[in-house]
Amino acid sequence: MVPPSPSLPVAFCFAGQGSQYHHMAADLMGAEPVFRQWMEIGEKILRRTHGFSPLERIYDRAKSIGDQFDRLEHTHPSLFMTQFATAKMLQAMGMRPDMLLGVSLGEFVSMSLAGMIPFETALHAVARQPAVFAATSPPGALIAVLAPESLRARSHVLSQVTEVAGTNAERHCVLACLATDTERVTDELRRLDVAFQRLPVPFAFHSRWVEAARERYNASVADLSFQSPFWPVWSACLARPIEAADHGATWRIVRDPMRLRATIAAIEAAGGAFYVDLSPTGSLAAILRQELSAESPSRAVALLSPFGGNLKRLADLQKACR
Image 1 (tube, rainbow, N blue to C red):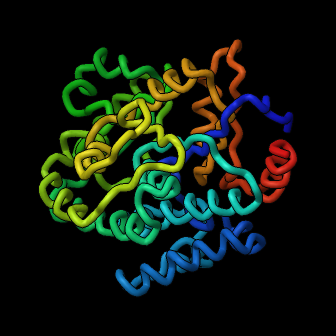
Image 2: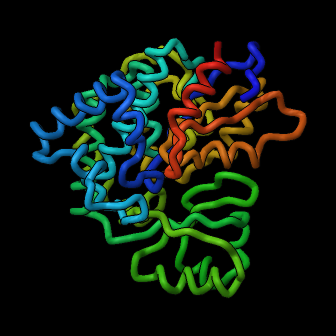
């Protein structure tokens, strides 16, 4: 790994639902004490307050990486914990961010890491969300599509039964729909010869189909208080740093479309960054590489992958950041 320019700010990047899988970061769990410590702290909290073990769900020996990991009450806090623990591990190694970039659930990770919400408080808030949506929202789907968002307007089926839940890159968007319309949508995407992937998410977040959750959601976060961040927290919902968070901002994170492409453009316009993707899949780094121009000094690296090699990438990242 070629060291980044010392003038580039370091941006830790965190992803949302759909980037989880069984055994994510298992090698870090075995080899890195700080990562394991934070995962075990989260484990104790959730066992006490929600009566389940996230570690047993993540590292279930009966499951393979390819098995579905989509029960929101398990995946939501597990994904939050994994990314937070990864960031704390890097900090303990001396790698400090200059800014944070969060996408969807990753925005909660960013806010907590930046000191806006204490870890335990943020974890409680994240763990309460699944019950809110289960009680208020119809089953839905999020589908990642390797095509511009304009594809939706060119298709009668897509314009009728989907909404754009996110624009990640020039040729990468996310469509939301009701679960009952999923087959129609995927059939239409096949007809259009467009590559797609249904994300392991049970609700149509970032669309009108979760609007009914607003009142109960706001009640679930009414006890949150927010502090000023240690570092700028870039929101993929707002496409700018969060200057002062409130309860309304946390609702927008789950209700409004993800604007990752616009957020990247804004960071690049400000001079760019050395983007360190801490999502379990490394998908944000892949999107960033699509969006960065040839003239940009910025670079994007991923630490974690479902295909292993995390410890080697960690060692490479440490060398690059010395």
